[in-house]
Length: 389
Image 1 (cartoon, rainbow, N blue to C red):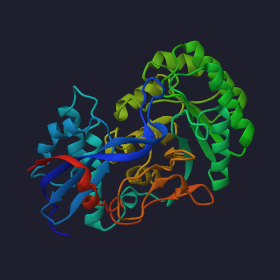
Image 2: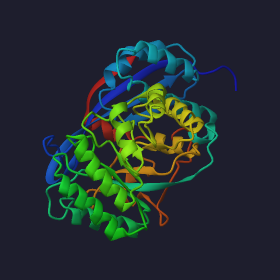
Image 3: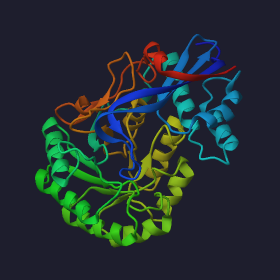
């Protein structure tokens, strides 16, 4: 193949991309929710890493707050061998040691895309992956105020039934950011009553419950309803080992924690502290594909499963190379809003109807990520660009 490609330039474009029929009210919901006629400007980062081999690694990220961190360590990559991802990962951890290090992920993913294109093979094959179809769960938008949306326990139950009819075998509730505990419990019961034992069910309050007692009450309802996992209930931000160890010991429903911790060391510490059952991992937030595979292997060594957070082509490639992972998170979906679109020319989408009749999504088969981003379309929404050379 000849000498390895050398990194010549890194371009990071900043976009504000409009999302129709969505809004934000942080006193009502922990994230975006359905509001007809509203528009939210979604921040996105377009990363392109150019090499002297004529191969460019590309990725479109929705990682919040990553830009400044990327600017801190990306100059280190210029003039280096583009295939030395482990060196870059380790050096970036060192440079970003006073930060949460979410800036590592988007750059690492683009480097994996470059490597896959160089070798003309999908990333999951470079990882030794073997799965080409991934079981998915429908992961809802946050509860809303609309009578035909997700504004009631009945609305969540209706949507769970719709998803089951589409082929989904699992469903996760993102509930209210201003929780009424009786309504939370009613929603837990309504969804289980509607779909019976035909779906694995999960609840993610997004750290909304004020007290341990509230989390315990909802957890006992989950126990009675046979939920598959209970995710981030406490208002500690999802990081307290002591609180989650105590909650885990009090409930039968497995906990899933770790979305708000980053990189392999923190996830491993949480598991060793008996503060979670399932592990969490996200290429955008946990050091890219390099970081996620470290987490997957650490979990495997402790006999634990890793569940990918959110959706995207990098997530699919990682999960395809893991034995110890159950479901792909098809996020965020809604009966009236079909999810997020990352503009591309490849037909790739993480939308509600992305699953087949068996409730599975496909792993992209093209070189690298297997996705061709529509940079020309995105140029109309660009607000800034950083060039590092």
